[in-house]
Amino acid sequence: MAIAAGLILPRLERHFGWRDGISYDVGAAESTLGAIAGGMITLTGFVLTAVTLIVQTVQSQSPRLLRVLDRTDRTPLLFGTFTATFTFALVALSQVSQNWVPNLSVTVALLLVLVSAGLFLRLLVTFRTTLTVGGLARAIGNRLREQIDLQYPACFDPAVDAVADERVLADPSWLIRYDGEPGILQAFDEPGVVRLAVGAGAEIRFIPAIGDFLVSGARLASGTGTPPDAAKFCRLVRVGDVRTLEQDPAYGIRMLVDIAIRAVSPAINDPSSAVQSLDQLDDVLQRLVGRSLGDGHLLDDSGRVIVRFPAPQWDALLALALDEVILYAAGSIQVTRRLFALLDDLLASAPASRRPPISARAATLRRAISRALPDEAQAAEATRADHQGIGSPRETT
Image (tube, rainbow, N blue to C red; front, side, top):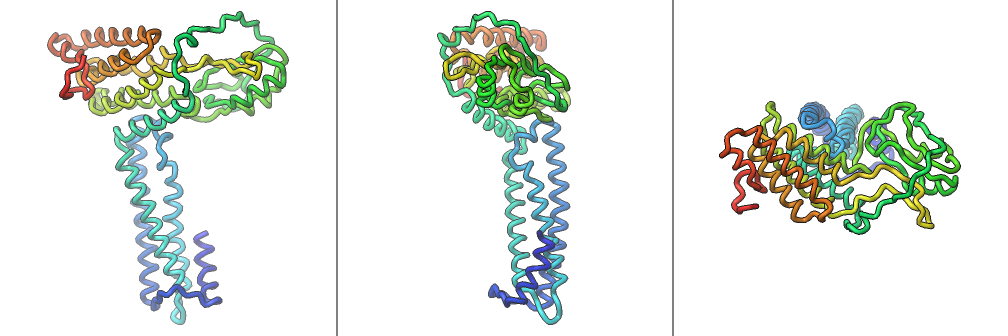
């Protein structure tokens, strides 16, 4: 587009006599366009180097983190605009002659520089606010909160949760296998699968959970009744190269845990960054502990269970969020104190049926601390709850 505009705009400008109220002499036009072209080429190389270093920094925390950043996947637009700016300037420069100057084209080149500068500043703001450990954790936490509110809007009701589907399931009479390329089960179209099951007169049971890796030929679904069309069913299932947060909040928890356990590794030794990640995990778990996580059932219009799928369980989500952090951070006083504050918060707000696994984690953390810190005074300090890790001005219990 820049090449075409650089060739066509000066000719249209000359043919129709377009004016923008700004006039350049030959020397000024050549100097301006030449400076724009040279400067933008240099800036493009600089930004490319900077983005490469930033990507390496993010991937050092976790290779999964780039997927949650809104701006980094738009860098092709940034580089495309930079390239278009210096390309347009070079092509427009070739249209300058001793007898005529494309004034409008020079002005357009200047406007492209302003657009490029705006995109560059926006990228810098993103890097400053997001591409730090705390910024990455906040970005993941924000995305995860959105998904939790979308997927689990209902409050936890112990009476409803205690009601289980005790019907003995009949042995499946058919099986659908995945026949595509290997990949991650990212999501499935819930209304579409229900309509397919109703239309076929079948009960569909998903075998893998969202986030599972599917090999070619893996068992995808089974069920009873008339088997649905396998091709139609597979079109309702999305398989990709990586996990996503859609229908898979455990993936967001996984990324926060990645940040925390890497921060407490001997190679990094940055417990403050682990505490920042635990701040986000604290909020996420607080939201989940008071929400109904579903039973893995989808109903038809008559209220009959017609689709079943593996649903997330509170015990499993809690284990994902805390077990590895407890294992690797037992020797870090700052992190263990923040963990106890997190567990105290959960115990204070969790329904009674969800408290036993929380209490079990607290006991596990105390045992891990006693093994990692033989000194009794240090162990006693490590078991005190502190929302700041070390330094909270208020006493917590």
